[in-house]
Length: 194
Image 1 (cartoon, one colour):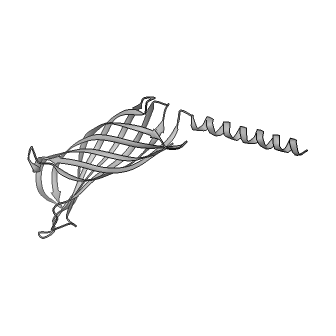
Image 2: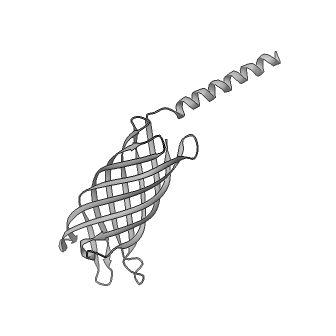
Image 3: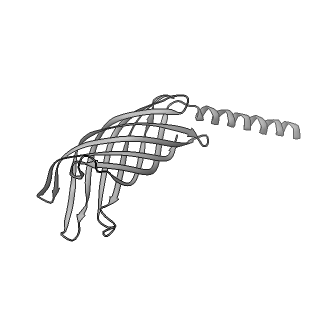
């Protein structure tokens, strides 16, 4: 009787492991990613050679159509204080994007999509000029690499280029600038859950 019980337990464990392995290898299903790093932003008001460094982060999610193709949406944020004397005064550049990515067996991937770029921030607190959230269309492209950490988790490294044509920059009804466009290059590290 004891031998039968051990065999039954062994068979149940083998079945459980087989089901878990099949689920882990399932080519389709939901995925979620979160991460952060550094970003370098340029905008028309900075001049052609000026770049600002700031923190960058993202949250992404979507559906894996196969082992190689994923579709999804994401929110990317780049933020930097305007200067050291006013740490509470900051620019925030957001992108809300729809993205398609192709993942090779090696772990490398390429991605691209369309974005809605948004700029907001407290530009000059002494004069009280707070940017209204201004937005415009844009695009995102990127490359990266995923390395499995566990059955359902992968470490993700990526480099992305985001561009958006905002147009008018406003503070309430006052137009501060026209012809605004922004570009952000970011290098991030994060986790992807599947």
